[in-house]
Image (cartoon, rainbow, N blue to C red; front, top):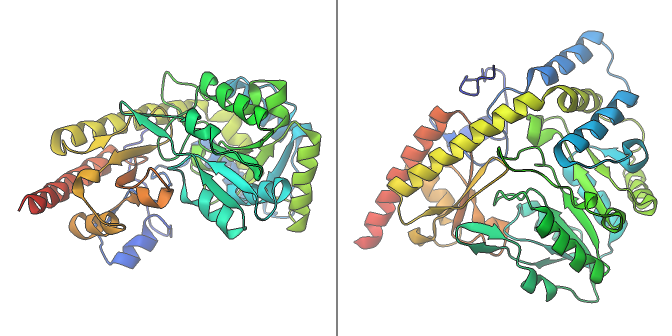
Length: 397
């Protein structure tokens, strides 16, 4: 029913992931596994919603209908078992990181400390530094090929200046959808230290078959009152070009402080017309598409793992249960800072994301975007393997 091996037509497209990088490098055969976009067509109900808006011929200020709140309410209950009054507890925004900025503005002040679990998307640290907040890194622990939270080290991260714990669930780049037990222990620690929780759950729908997403705020009434959760359809339904997000905060005081930050940016009047309607279509009518997508992504991860094990035996790909990333340990190649990205671009004409840019614990790793056709992944892994072998040969001689 869904053909993820179909090549999309790129005529007329201008994307950061492909066209911008081909223009920058001059490599017409470049393969791009860096930027977190999918190479698949967005699901048909989402595309239909876009066409319907265009056909109506009116692009004025929108207002969210009741169907918008109902779609989110039902979606959260289906994927996370979380029953929440979305109309009372939600607020819309543009992109996910604009929403995060509003949370930081609402709950912290310059000089406050915010705990993050590295390696994590570079925006986490960058946004904190750019807004004069202090990132405190609690690196995840890699044990037997799988990442876990390091609770013992976390206890030492809290000081009198700690105001916020910034969670990534599921986690980019390591591909973990945190379990109820892990989240429960994390929540207990945050409660004990009286710290608020910002949960970035933008990848919440991208969970492998047999695994489940759990919202932190769904665990208890106390945790729901100290948690604000950021959502967006963008990563799950391949709509990153439609800047649209929303937050859920069941604590009215937190939600009001968040909305006050929205008003500072004049973001309370009107919202993204395409964002509202595509969100309704996605949440109501695309469960089958996402299920088929994640079966395909899991297959891509197995393919990448097989290639790493067979062709690059000194490298290691970590276990994953969510997102569309492969997180690969390439420390055996002995690169200095920044060298791996340039090497694979030059020698293999492939783009990867550098682990060192994602904070402590990412040094020597690379992130590979698997949301692509199997044929593209196959060619990319073959090129990577040849470049890897060339590098290993040079180190031996």
